[in-house]
Structures are given as C-alpha cells and as structure tokens.
Length: 295
Length: 210
Image 1: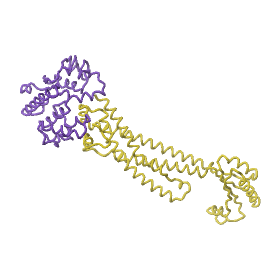
Image 2: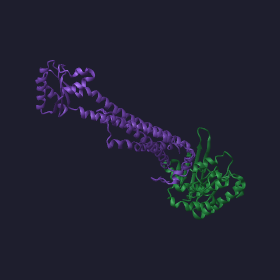
Image 3: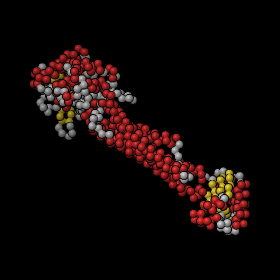
C-alpha cells in the first residue's frame, strides 16, 4: 500500500470518510487568517522601522535662538557657512522664515508672520554618516555658541525601539500560532485514530506497517490544513491589501514607508504551505507514537 | 522446514489473573489441516491470537517459519502477519469498502500495483461464488456471503498459514456445511499449489459434518 504523491481512489477509501466533519479545515482557516495578519503586521513594522532609519539617520536641525534679529541672522550665517564647509555634511539648508510662520500659524495665528517676532533661525542638515554628528556639532558650537542642535534619532529612537518591539511581538505571535497548529493536529490525529480503531486493527492484522497507516492520516490532515489554510490566507491578504490602501491614503510620511516588497508577499503566501508541512510532520509523529504502543 | 509452527511451553496470562493458556506445546507441519476443538472459554481464540501475532505469550516460545516470534522486534511483525491469513468468526470486513476492495486489501497492503489487483480479486470472487456481488457493501451481504468474502480476503495473498477462528460460528447450519466444504476444497487446492497448514477452531458438531 504505497501512498503515491497523487493517491489513488483505493488509497483514499481505506479510511472511512463518511460522516467526517470539516472542523479541522475551518480551524486551520482561522489559524492561518490570524497568522497571516500577525505576519503582515510584523513585516509592516519592519518596513516602517527601516523607513525611519533611512529618513532619520544623520539628520540634524540647528536652531539659532537669539532675541536680537541682527545677531540672530549673523549667527545663522556663520553656522550655515561652517556647515557647508564641513566635509561630513551632505547638505545644509536654511528653513525659510515664511515657511516657519506657516507652520506656526495654528498656534500663533497671523502674528507668526510678524518680522519682529523672535522665531529661531533654523537650518536642516544632512550628514554623510550618523557618526559624524559629534564632530559637526563641535565645529558648529565654535562659530555659533548659542546654537541648539536637535538630532532626530534622539527623539525618534523610542519610536524606533517601539517598532522593533512590535516586530519581535509579531514574530512571537507567528511562532505561537505554529505551536497551536501542531497541537490541534496532534489532537485531530488522535481523534482520527480513535474513530478508525477497527479499520486500523484490521490493517495491522493484515501486515500494514505503522508508517503506512501514519501516511493515510498525514495525507488527510495535510490536505485539510492546506485547504483551510489557503482560504484563511486569501481572506487575510485581502484585508491586508485593503489596510495597505487606507495607509497609503493617509499621506503620513512615517506610515507611507509601510509598503510590502515582493518577497514580503511571497513570505505571507508561503505560510499555508509551511503550516501544511508542519501539520504533516506533527500528524506523522503523533500517529506513529500512538501506534507504537499497540502490538 | 517440515514444521512450520512450533509452540513450546507457551503460557498466556491476561492482566494479573490465572493463566488462560498453560504449557502449550505442539507443532504444525506443512500441507495439513488441523481442527482445534474445546469447550467454550478453553482458550482456543487466545491460542489463535498467539498464532496470528495479535498477542505475545507471557512465557514460552513460539516459532513461526523457524523464528522465535516472542522475541521478534515490533518492526518485523508486519512482515510475518502478511504470511498469515485469518478468517474471523465475526468476519471483520471493513463496512465502508465493497466486497472487491475488502478482498483486495491484503494485496494493497503488500504493495501490489493497482493494475495487477483486479484479475486475482475477480478470480477469488468467482471461486467463492460472489462474482456478481463485487460492488456490494458488507451490510448488504448475508452472513454466509460475508464469510465467503472474509475467506477470499484471507487466502488471496497466498499466506503460508491460514487460521480460521470459528468460521461457521455466525452462520446457519446449512451455510456452515457449505463453508466447511469450501475449506475442504481450499485444503485440496492448497496441498496442490502451496502446501500451507491450516488450523481452524470449530465446534464438535461442525467437525462431525466433515
């Protein structure tokens, strides 16, 4: 009784399937639905963390805080010149005062445009490498002691840490779902052995090996896992795609980096196949273990 | 190998009670037909279970095909079981399979290619007089018909030993006589073609009919 890759009708008929429910299939659909969502969440957090790193690495904002407008402009000019001379600086761009006034309008109203208002002069700086920050900051303080320097990484690092925690959490969720799937399969295999007790006893007496009997169960369980898993995966991917569309419509710079590459979609689509393989191994192991206790 | 089966001081105990079988010793030789008779509860079925490897003895030695089966590793048991055909009193046909598929079961277990199964199974169905009932499920067969399917299943793999546990126990007397004649012709056929021993338990009344 060799179970080929494509089993014959005779092989499939050895275990009575009449009256069997498709409970395992529905359970697997739910498991894979949740697993794919967790996986997508993790991949999205990973993409957002990568975007954050790309956007923030080596970025500074220099603020010249000076009440006197003439002193402020002189200091800003010295700072800008020093920055543009520094070899580690890729770009140094002064922030337009009018643009600043526009940014402050929700809080200051039209007063933000008042030229006498001592709004700090600001310069956006992009460094070649993040390690260059201390050197640049030291050089800047020599020409503009009153300059305040904001490193984006400093105040965004908790956000980056949070993203990485979410990635780890998503990975842990996927592992938990895999363990739960294996447990469900073991229970289903044992229930199947109990339900087909007489058939198995007869097959044993005819000289069927444990491996042959185990293959009957593993095939059935693998197919139920695969069919249910594919259904759950498709539903989850539709939901993920819909959420992705909503995120893209937000226009927020951070979350717009949450975009799946082809390999991310491939990883999600591979999940039902991986789980079907896991179910096959779990079924085979548990059935052979139970049969090993029977003479 | 003249003696194909040897029991030597075999004992069998279920649980912690008294021994069901004590100091059983006998040999079975090739091509012979043996009847095992005894009162109800004497241990006939238990002895047959030892023979077709559904039980291991609690003591003693059982040699089948010149090997001590009591010491046989579990992984080798299937190979021995394929050489033993068994007919049960309660038939033990698989209810979800047709007569054809029940008879074909030993061939499929042994790995015979599907293309080589149909011919011997149809021949066997014809031999037991059920050629027209190949697709019938056991539930639609009479007791006698079911037992004939069971006999066909037991012999189709040309086993080295054929064991029958009260094969006529669940059929009416007329059918019992017909089944015993079937065994008779099987024995003659066996002697001519493959020299295997047969052992059957039966009641004294059945034995008297032969």
